Image (cartoon, rainbow, N blue to C red; front, side):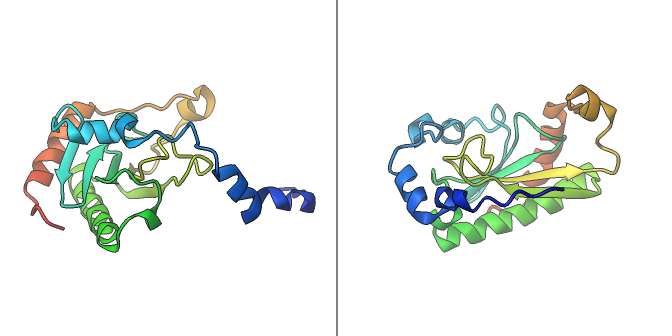
Length: 178
């Protein structure tokens, strides 16, 4: 990989330039009333929105647009964009819920690994940057193939409703507290 050293761009990535950019409201960050996650959890229709488990400060749901079958998200109820915006007890519960999601998914889906990540902010790749969410993506050896590479198309070889039903049964058997 070649690198181009461009020190004249340092002002663009420094705190002073960042503060100037942040004074404007980012139109890509929805407010809580416009947030799809806030609306879905408030609707109390867990089957429709693939919500698997509710805890005191956070909940676990399946992703409607998964990278793989069983792609889950752990979200705080609060509409907050960054980890530092959350109280320590909320961050702790999210991490415990993440661990529960990983163990439960592996038990039901027999996957061989996971990708776990958080896209923070619009520049961090967040599709919904205003509401923090932790992704867990089950992985199997060989789960990417020519279709993704050449056809730029992801094949999901499982019925999402069936995956939800299987995972929901397992999550329903778990305690209501992390």
